[in-house]
Image 1 (cartoon, rainbow, N blue to C red):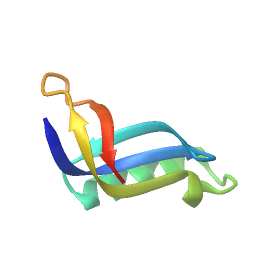
Image 2 (tube, rainbow, N blue to C red):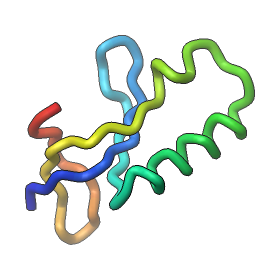
Image 3 (cartoon, helix red, strand yellow):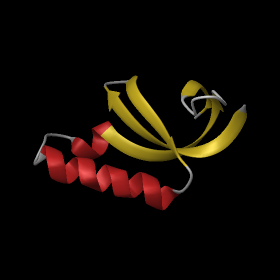
Image 4 (cartoon, helix red, strand yellow):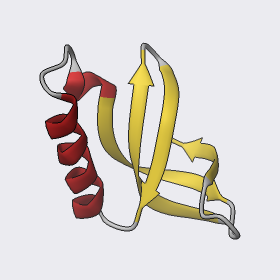
Length: 71
């Protein structure tokens, strides 16, 4: 299933290391704030972790992102 959703992205350089879908921007930002609090002060946190609205292909059974269609 292809849908437009908010995705929490962890990027290292130009490579997307991890990505998780959320139904709303507020959910995505809430998780991002929790990660920031739990990891403590880190170098370039705001450049590594971001919430973006993306078109993605999602596995209907698991809800996991299979592919990022459009950035």
